[in-house]
Length: 153
Image (cartoon, rainbow, N blue to C red):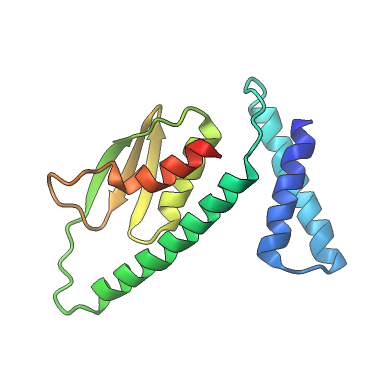
């Protein structure tokens, strides 16, 4: 059941991202989706099966796209400024997400957003490199929007 669920979910994502209905793309998409789903189900046997809420997953995709656009604009403004004063830092942010795949989704979401990079995940801590951090800033704001949505998926 888990294998079928993950294969179908990954294949649907493949088709949406490639937007190509040629037979070669479908065969490759099925092969890649099945391989990843098989690897996932073999590596995480002890985990309970979690269904994903399609509604919250769509909300997550919207939030991800919005953050990608906004952060690209912010990075572009920084690059074009003549002074380009940056204050990079590595911050440790605690997450309340319990499942490993949700923590991984959070880490990848942060990494996809320009200006941030998840370096490591240790238990409930994410170590994130940011290009702009001011002492005293609320570091939980880096992950809050993504984490709130991912928790509901």
